[in-house]
Image (cartoon, rainbow, N blue to C red; front, side, top):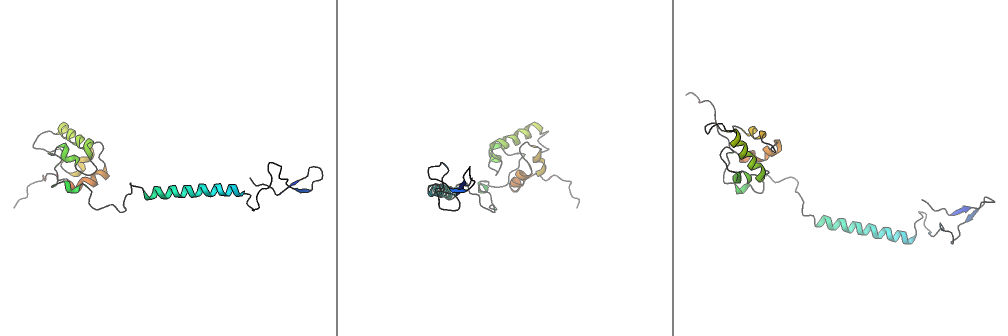
Amino acid sequence: MTIPNAARDGASGERVPNRPDTPMGNESDSPCGWTPRQRTALLVILVGTLMYASIRFVLNSSYISNPQPDEPPRARELADRIDPNTADAESLAALPALGEKRAKAIVEYRERFGVSATKPVFLEPTDMLRIRGIGGATLDQIRPFLKFPTTGPAMAP
């Protein structure tokens, strides 16, 4: 809302300057209509907001580097590749992006649908997609750490 510099007199229609005793009197000399007190308050708010945003930016501990590192942070915890058909839940939980809950789900699935000890449940990496909570992105992250049995027809000499 702008404050008019002059008001019209009701009877004659002439423009008369605002009087200081009126509630909407012209208190500023600037063309934008902001009083010095309002400008100071706005400046204090803007500086405070800028300082707050700067401090949050500097102290942000959840920074994620871009691009992501080639090797996951816990990759060195694994001595070798893990076979999901024989690994226990603790070994599977050490894989990146799995955790204890998904590791237990893998073991439960293996125990429930394992027909015999001679035929493994997981023959290839895509078999892991049958487990709830493991999708394509998770499988891509854990694939380098898994090994699967090589079951194929014997080659004739």
